[in-house]
Amino acid sequence: MFRTGKRNLITDVPGLRVGNVSDARLKSGVSVVVCDEPAVAGVQVLGGAPGTRETDLLEPHNIVESVNAVVLSGGSAFGLDAASGAQAALREMGVGFRVRDNRVPIVPAAILFDLANGGDKDWGRYPPYRDMGYQAVQLAAHDFSIGTVGAGTGALTAGLKGGLGSASTVLDNGIHLGALAAVNATGSVTVGREPHFWAAPFEIGSEFGKLGYPSPLPEEARRIRLKFRDKLANTTIAVVATDAVLTPAAAKRLAICAHDGLARAIWPAHTPADGDLIFALSTGTSGRVLSYDDSINLCAAAGATMARAIARGVYAAEPAENDLLPVWSTRLA
Image (cartoon, rainbow, N blue to C red; front, side, top):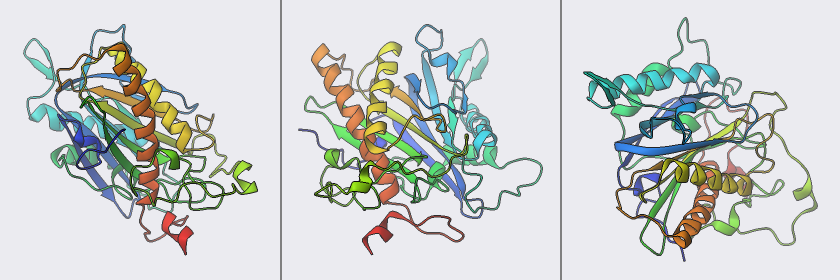
């Protein structure tokens, strides 16, 4: 049986901290996962409309095997500036890949589209994301809020506000695994117009309402519900992390398996209109190299934990001025 870590956040994985910066007027924000020590990393992109930075270097055949932080940002392509701000903050701290006398922080990033969400995007000449990325690194901590914060501040899904979600799992062998997701999907996280989450089978305790599935399933559960049909207006971006010792190839496999949870929590997912992407991190702080059976259990837990993180992000969303969509709690009214 799986259980949650003490925080039920990705920071239950030793060696990680998370910083969030939110702008309510802008209806956007930035989330940064900071690695206390360089972490082995991988990535898998399955959506048809991704926006990324430094993802090619994460392929197992390339030379840089570890990263110093990962950025999830709103702002569409403008949000890629957040990684520059995070990189600047880390450089000031003396963190980064050593090249002779230089330090180059390695900071992959992904963005979601939250430009058309009711926020004021009249930011002038330069977008604010670089400064937000810098601030997020400064604020990085083990405890952080979920819901309408960070990269999930302006997120939307089909019929409901999205949000930033996180969850953790402790496997029977003591290995920790966590997930962080900014949920801005074109699809729906709930069964039809019911409050029940597609991720219900993986819920631990009552972390997102303990409603299970509706019985019987409503006929409308089979109907495809979409937020927007704009080609670039959606995306769920996420991070899955573990304290197990992984190779770059194993980290990529973990990212691939975590996408199973994305597909179990959102329907439809991985469409041409989504930029669905998951980063994987291995801090290696447990010192444990996994057996074949343990690796399978870790991959299964990655999918389940990601599904829970996605549901928790929508479950925790809060209403704000000029919202285009209601929050999940209104489904209970």
